[in-house]
Length: 206
Image 1 (spheres, rainbow, N blue to C red):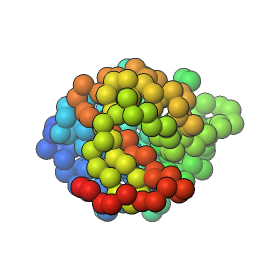
Image 2 (image 1 turned 180 degrees about the horizontal axis):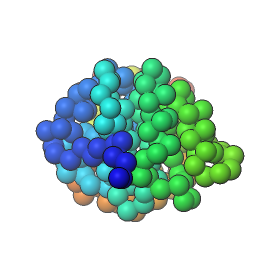
Image 3 (image 1 turned 135 degrees about the horizontal axis):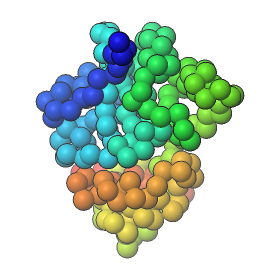
């Protein structure tokens, strides 16, 4: 008799909305998975599949993976649920262990992930943190100002701006531009550019 899969996919917009609402108290730590869930719920973005642990807990235990690449995934849960996540990752068939790339892993789950990958791949795993991969330079021609504050400028990016953002990332270089291009038609891409410390802050205009 086959063992029941420990993760269940979250498919409907209503379920995804409920999941995003449940994740909100842990922002910004869960920001990556929260954004993925919210874009699927409200914009119909289908680049990733989203799963939750079948076992009930007070806070969601979430796994997301690329639809066309089962070895590219990310996870989020609270520290108290880390043992349940670890047990699930050791047996799940939702993800593949061939050429694994794990992204947006919070600090408290790095050791868990290393142990799982080492056990399932049969060799010592290395985890490179890539949570700070949206670092880029602003070019006036590639972005349109939405709002200004004392901290910086919020801009909307067109297709060329998204490509420029990808070229100038300082982290997460394995994240392909094609994924961002797939997101762009369905979801507006925005960038926040810090105000240079040498310049006086502009007046708040929202």
